[in-house]
Image 1: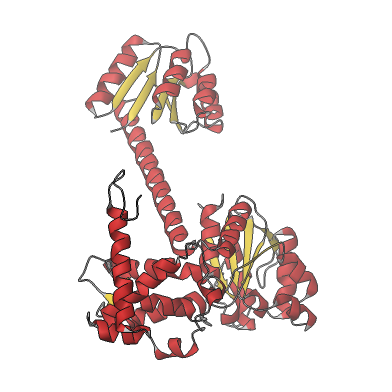
Image 2: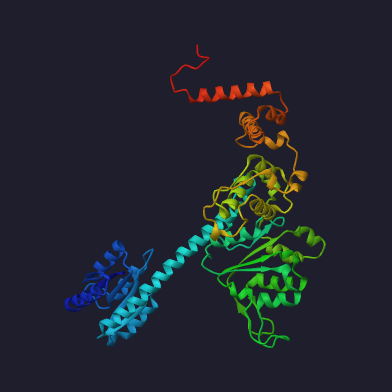
Length: 474
């Protein structure tokens, strides 16, 4: 059901239209003046305003202008006499969606309203889907509370409000593609297209055509006209991954395009222009590539407008628990990682970064009985699964960084908590056998009993109600 505001000073026509539209299932409000229409439009936010162009207190064009200025403006259908069709055309130019010439049939109005409301419903649905998509990209890529990642997120947030060219730098597997997608979906261009081109995956002979498109007959095999990624990304974002792999001939053509957003299709003579935002990424040291003369210096400075360095996973091990839980829960709800397994995941240097971490977790889930990463659509609640140390590849323990005090001192670190967790883990591995647990910990059985007794006393002390004297109270 749509909300319709009907503005007409002819009582008979207004009453007839109101009755017919109400019978058709619409919620209808009727007013007789332009001022009333503006007031109701501001307070009730109707979906469609149907207004006569000739009103007793003001021109219907003024009503149109005022109601279309709202934050969520209604669609407008204007009613006009045959003699004033030129005014109706002017109303269309100012934002009216359609017009009716008197005399008109009720069915004609019903059809126009049905089309308008259907279009509004689709727009609303599209907006909701865009918002959901934006949230998905944020959830997948913007994970991390470490200082390095907070800095990346802050830079991403600041540049997303602009159209500046962004250069994402970092090792393979650090999440540059996900960050580029998040940047697009947080920008003002989020409703436009996002076109991704992997520059290293295409041969030089095809790359120019893929980027700029070609005309029919431009080269052997060009049997039809083709639009390139640059043109498809109009009013959106063009993401060029592995930009450092571009051959020099393409660098020259892209440099010219970056300067004025104008280009020719391959084999074409017509100058074309687009409104495109550039995001580039590379795992290479581009400054060194300039020194090696594999990257043009002028091209490098053109793309290096707003560089963001994405840190490798080994430099933000604090984020690993959050990343692990995100990956695992999206694939197998209820699954979790044992303490010693998580500790090993944090000590491994991850040369393949986040991509390697995800692959390791996929293997571990399969070994743990979780069935692996079968996709987010099948992540329903299943039997409980625990990823243990035995489910992780041996290479992780062979190349893990040693446990040093410098690795332990992280926010929230507590030596008491560490000792408690070590004792609990040793008891779990020894199936409750205190003698075996003491051996695992490298202490005597008597000392283990002492520590357990001390931990028990600490818990009892925490549970004593306020105002009750403790064992050591005087």
